[in-house]
Image (tube, rainbow, N blue to C red; front, side, top):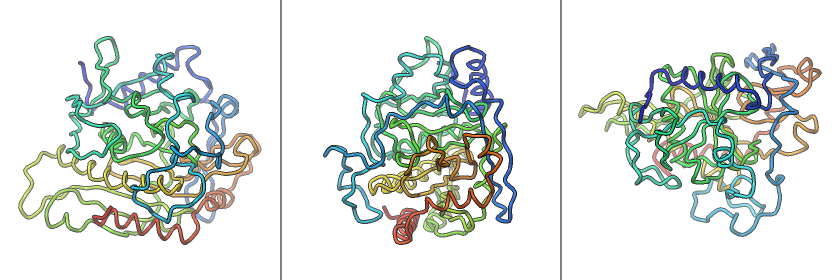
Length: 408
């Protein structure tokens, strides 16, 4: 198999994306380039943006998910063995719904719309012993092992490979979807294993600044219950304002400074409208020295980060706490925003939807009037209204701290 690893990944993705752009009928909204975008000035100085594309709302694929609060069957309840952030509530779960093959999912795209598939990525060693649904307990692959495969008749089609699809209604040039283990029919949840795929995928951006991944849980504006993350290339979009938000350190896994190995840290935003947790991984050598290569050290750091943050997001999922996630820094930094479940009529009713774009600083609006009128204060207030109740927020912070300091 021909594999292009690391260097040139972003340019390869963008070249494939532009080729689909030139093919009539592939995109629902081919006029993404007409998007208006401006920064919201104001006393808060948060660097917010707002953007508007007239066709984006009308060409957006409608969600087939049941509304928030719909009745779940017994098998849709989360297993009691999962760690809890707060006491289990009697309400019907929204975030932890199982995959439903009868609804829209990306496997249907792979089967019927091959032009929507951009790239195949995965491990060059193709270790079939891994479990897409289980914990990631083996050392992570080095960047030279996690590769971009050339699509074609000769390309491997292992269940352990992952697909990059176009977003048929893009918000910017290059807007794509990473679908981990697409044939495994995983629901829209980030486990340690799928997190590891996301971090390794981001490591293909060797600059660490050219690409970010965004995730909406169910109840946080996800419209498809099939595990996927939004891939945003920053050359046109400019990145998310939250990346520059000030933070304060909360906890570290201090033992690593003595033994060597991955160092994990947890920080928290100090002035963002909603509390955002920032998990970061670096690798330091202990007193005994570290004989591993630089790429191996980085891979081990991503593995440790995936295990910790994946445990945290699965605890949120178990307790029906919606969340938005952003992966940056070439897979070394993860932003997690636990928040209230979405509610109300949504964008169809004129309400500002608070999804991954909005939580982390960019408002997507659906009318020229809203674009012209939105202020920094109004947007900050809309995000703040999604904040968790104080008692739940304290429990979430305590659990995040425990995860980083070595607990579960």
